[in-house]
Length: 537
Image (cartoon, rainbow, N blue to C red; front, side, top):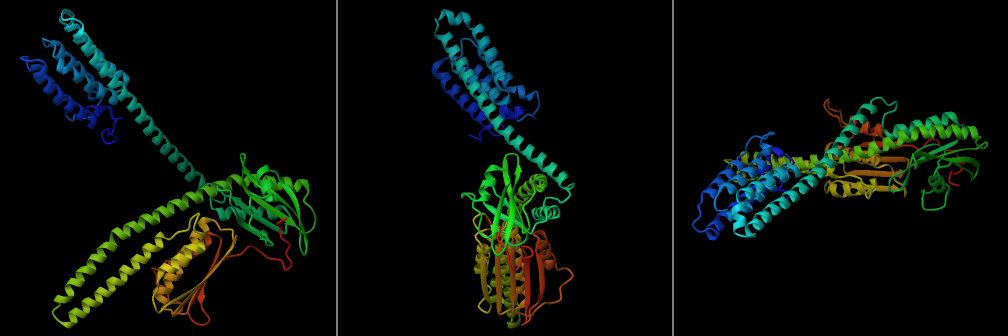
């Protein structure tokens, strides 16, 4: 049905919609079939005139306000043809449905009335005496077909309104999205710390540390799925166990009430602390835990901390939303690139390889055959590299796939070769890093493994991943040829550094003591006391 209603909102072309053309042809065939059966000896001139009107109405005239009135003119002319014919050409009355349908789809209720009512009135007026002399049957027939035409037109008008509402709603959503994205682009350029979650989290922790003499600070954010994950820490390790909002902990109480709550934590030392909510409207989007060894927080200090939290809550929520949008857009673009490479250059290279295979048997001498075989081997190597690149592009983390899971799947699928052994050690806490952070770490690991495989010629590759949010450490080592002099047009190391900086990590690339290369990217959780007390009450 949707294909028949192609562009139903284009009023200038409603007379040529597929459904109208089909209805026009079908009704004309019906009229032509009924004319000799019901009106023996009657003139075929009205039918011929109606065919001419139908053909003219079906011509693809340029869309304009005038062509929008074609269904109305078609209805009036059809009524005039039927009205001037004598006796009443009853088989032609069904044709009134066609202009009613076109007017309903193109113009709406008013168009249906202008197309059907004048035509029905003219037919009744012209054949009134004939109809009354022959009884009420002809009057009833004219009235029935006029009502049927009106009903069809009204249904078409309702369908037009329904489709217009759907299209208008879709356009409105895209218009709203464009307006919001445009505002986001303009505003993000004027923000003091931008829309980077890591930068905002660090800025919040720095400001809290400047205003409060705290020995330990921990920032946690609450996702839409009500999952709590650490974003940053200062001082001592803050979170001893994963935070669960379904229990009766202080985290849950502050999250639900939106009010700060003090606590005391005991260990080798005693901490006096407070958990503060980060709220936007009536939602708690984050929790901030601040503690110190000396004395409780004064009410004025708590108010200052709450004011800082309020000022950062909206910024942090905007940054988290922006990160989610950026992650989705990046993932979709990577999938698109993978499809384009697979369907484009990879297929062309595969065809080239088959062509070389067909040339090898017809080589004129052994030298030519050897050259072709070397060329075929090189094409095979390039195709393999392309397939690995496609896999790199399609490998990603998600809500259900953590960094270490994605890294394990990637190493398993990499299949470097029988001469290279990959040793994988994964350590992961129940809590996760942000998806955008995990995605950047996965790309760094992929780049490090690709460089080792392509340039290092190693026999062993060691990959160690340790995730303890918000801290992480990713270590990739090999026993290959070691660091080579980089080309001027090589951007691999630069891109790795940019990725590390984006997530607040430090990247180190250096020669391995026993030979080979070491790549390490890490983010610490802050200075750790020798005798820490846990923040978890």
